[in-house]
Length: 256
Image 1 (cartoon, rainbow, N blue to C red):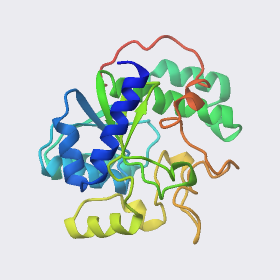
Image 2 (cartoon, one colour):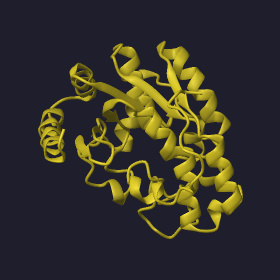
Image 3 (cartoon, rainbow, N blue to C red):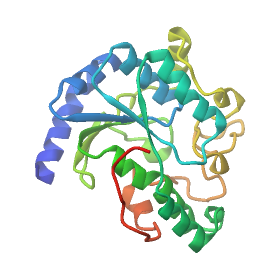
């Protein structure tokens, strides 16, 4: 499919999704021709989507990026969520060669020292595993919301991801955090206990802190950096991919 065709299809799908509720949006994507993959970070938004996929038994693959540096609470929630909804969450891990290459160049915790190093760490632990998780996918479902940060304020329901040659679906784009919390409470959806400790956005343990009163939802992510629009590279792929230290080529697309 050409870039223009992909963008036109995404634009039409965006209009279709706008008038539907969450269940309707996900059901529509599940009916489309092509593989649909939802990548979950186990955050509160993603738990809402996972619950909908599991409860309605939708044909959408659920995957997570097990970076090797997640909070213990996040890892435990993977198993709890699988058991609650009777689903399989595929785990994608970084390649050891990539981790070794990063450590050799920057040091294991060198991500604190520069934006370049932090992008490289995210690239090795998240961006490259994401490529394996999305292999063969036509649709990538995410938990992005407009209220999460200034960088996400214009998030559509569907958009063309030209770098990956697929359409990204953001079914919660118009949900605010209050709506998310109310839905979780009403449906009894299991969530990360770190949310109750001041962590609205949860990533790798060394790179996430609790936020202070009045701070934006994602202020606790890579808090030592000054850029208010900081991201890991999953949703701005060129930023992280270009900084990944070169090691051996990706050996396999298999889940480990």
